Amino acid sequence: MKRILLCLAITVVLILMIPAVMGAMNWPLSDAVAVIGVLSVSAALVALLAPGKGKAQCKVLEVWMSADAEQAGTYNALWSFSLNARVTNTGEVEELLEDVELKVSKGGEIFRTAKAIFGAGPVGLQEGTILPYSLAPGVSIETRGICHLSMKPVEMERLAGATQPPWTVTCTFIFSRSRKKVVQLSVDNPHWS
Image (tube, rainbow, N blue to C red; front, top):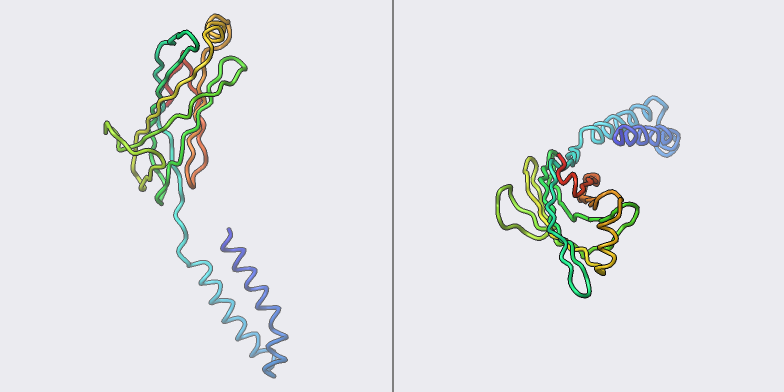
């Protein structure tokens, strides 16, 4: 669509130049229209036939979470969980998985967590590279991060005993070109696909 609009804009500008060409070159109307017509056709061909950028599109195929039991210490309680995801680049150009943002909540309360450091690598590989990670077209990767939520033991007990919904983790996958993908997991439903 942008190319068509560019082509139309070039054609309009060239048509508006006909009187200027006629006056400057002392050409009759037919010669000026012929020259402007040739220029507008060549500009349209360049605008429409120029190689375009490929489409970027990444998909999150599967996300799963495993949570450790809450560990209550003297001064704080710690809840740890790991998050794994399988991501694939279904687009035509190379893409970059820049980051995975996490929000932990229980009921209506959102809690601040330690920043999870995510790594990524080819599917099935035990070790990976810290994000950002480059995905070539057609490539699938796995990414994994470990996160910790720390609070006072009294607060953790209050939340554990409350009749609120379970712990919920909202994951936002951020890509360099593709749209963000948001996935929500909970302790009761730790798998999404």
